[in-house]
Length: 79
Image (cartoon, rainbow, N blue to C red; front, side, top):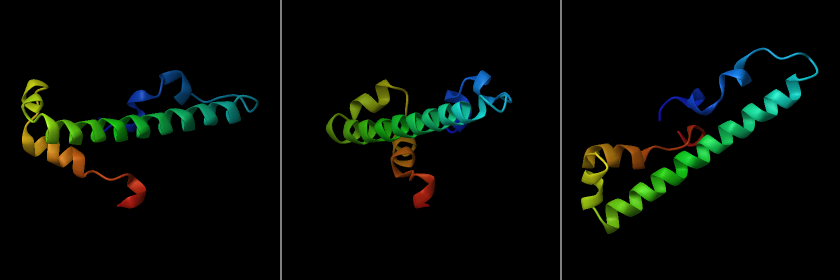
């Protein structure tokens, strides 16, 4: 989850022709925004789960310190 480009398909990272460059940059931007939203939603769900049903944290294979560390992460522009 710490790798930003994991959700970006390899074809998007390859050099594009000048005609395709703006479209490819837009695709990369959309994928990046989607990854941020997914991580934000995951952290929100994790926080909710730890408050409502803490026993489920063990079921998904995380420890309490791991959950607290993940919940405490901020978007890069708020660091």
